[in-house]
Length: 90
Image (tube, rainbow, N blue to C red; front, side, top):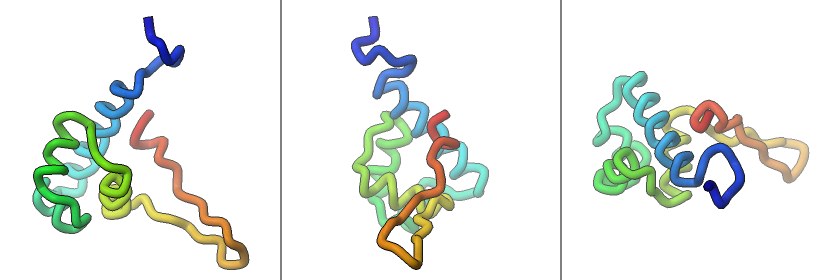
């Protein structure tokens, strides 16, 4: 039984996220080394992410920005929203 009472466990979501990022990387014809270099994430950390789904939030955001997920700031206010990351997870 799933202790989180949701369809996907956190581990499932991490694996799916890593698979989707890998797919996006390949669609953009980028090597692991190139994405790691451009996002300033060590190659070892990036490879581990693709294999296990484990990565720091900071590194994930760096990678997401390189893949085209970036903040959209509200110039008139202090709020900042982000393009939806749903395409990576679902």
